[in-house]
Image (cartoon, rainbow, N blue to C red; front, side, top):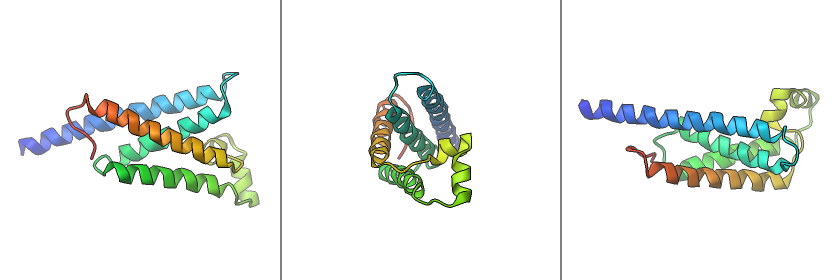
Length: 137
């Protein structure tokens, strides 16, 4: 029973790390939209990175391939949803939260930005997992 408590404790610590990474990424993304001179695609990269950290937080024991695929599928689905132009959806997109989460205009370049963000997430995970006692699957 001591092993399961230790494993649960380590998983909790790992979740806390990913929670902090999500918050830091959200703050960086919001700042990137308000600092003149930062290209818009930086915010899209950070959005993809944030999604990666959220998926890893939620599925802490899943294999890396699962987290990558889930993150990219979510990002791409949100981007393709921007092709749907119903009045209610457009009204939602014109709110601050709706615009931040759903975006407003479909762009192929955003897909590349999300892919780069997820790739950065993988690199961050590999870097931090070297220093943590328990590693994600």
